[in-house]
Length: 181
Image (cartoon, rainbow, N blue to C red):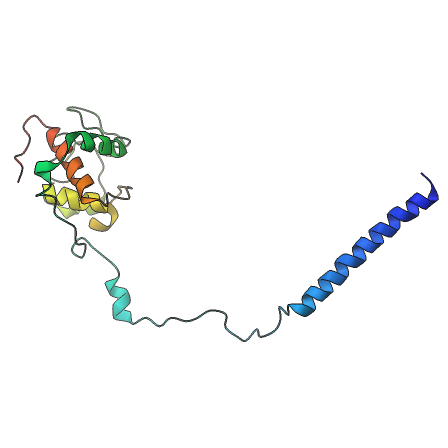
């Protein structure tokens, strides 16, 4: 390599450094990042306290469409397809073992939190009552909001027809299914 080529390489490196430095200085002059530090860049939104308290929900605040009228026209096939979402954590066969969640055999009108050998959350154990059609549909809508503190990690079923199909399918998983309402 000749001395002329080395000089060209060094000159191009120096020119590149100068160009980057000049662009940086010009950018700092055009966009002054230190200007108006006292100025707020976000808007404050005033919210009344009683409004923020009402945004929280519990099982009494949730309005859920009833499924009783839809059960007579609900589909077992669709319910079985929807159950696949539940099947990763629950079994529905008779005498089946618990998975992450308890088995769902003979669920309708069964007392809550009563499956032997399954550790229920304190919230569900204290909630009490039985799994009626509407109670189960309410829980399936948004479990974490219906019973606050439940361990069930399921987003819920928003469509009322999906809940009706699933509840009808779960009703059939019994030796003596409970009569439809």
